[in-house]
Length: 322
Ligand SMILES: [Zn+2]
Image 1 (cartoon, protein in one colour):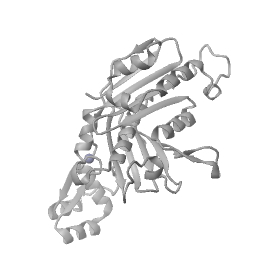
Image 2 (tube, rainbow, N blue to C red):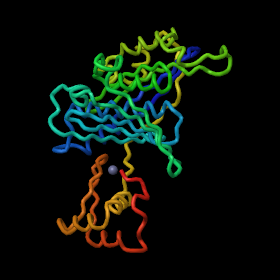
Image 3 (tube, rainbow, N blue to C red):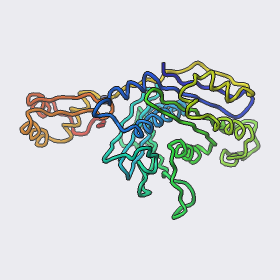
Image 4 (cartoon, helix red, strand yellow):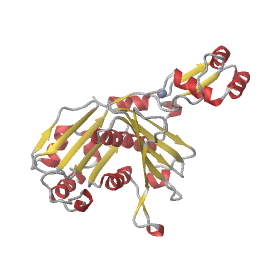
């Protein structure tokens, strides 16, 4: 069963989380099986992004969707993982062309150095006109300009993001195959206002906390194979047997899609009457498939007629369009 485990290092300013998506991740892949299946390299990427998204959503107290998007300039144009506050997640990718065997981040998404990762926090109770929060990080590191070194793992990209956005040291280990998508996150706790010297700031502590550095080094020894095959108790004991951990009740991430007939109807309304009717004239049917869960929505001439009948009309784009 898919589970997220949170823990603290007793007496140390460090917290951790370990996620294993099993049944929920297999469900995602089952919906993209056969001819529609993603290449294996893309399945690994999406699994790692799903695990990372669940860790990041559980790590912030935020009432809204956390969306990880990697925009690529290689054969993978887009990879998305979206996680709700209750840890319901979904993923999708847009692949155009051939993904080379064994391709990693650069060969999939950053061939010309233009790839970037966008992290969006979209509040559930967003007011009209209010923009969601967005952070953007490149798929490379180093100083600006020619010196930039392409990153090969999504974990490194997200570590950079968390260092930038939260001013907190973070170590992230991710792995995925066709059975499990898993991740380990270790993070230094934010400086607490009380009991600190005046002016102590999170950014002043980056890289300097001995407890975090020691624990992060231990975390980095976790192999991909161990993360994918060992249960949580074994992983935590193997890595941190000399540390005192405080464990919490596990949470249950699950796969769930947010698409609905109503959302697709609103999208078609946004497309306009002429466009929708020409689709009907062409094929007798409007067919819209959900990129996340694979569900197919069908609208016939009567449905489309009703959509644009006065009195049933809503202003175009009045609901979220996926
Ligand atoms: Zn769907």
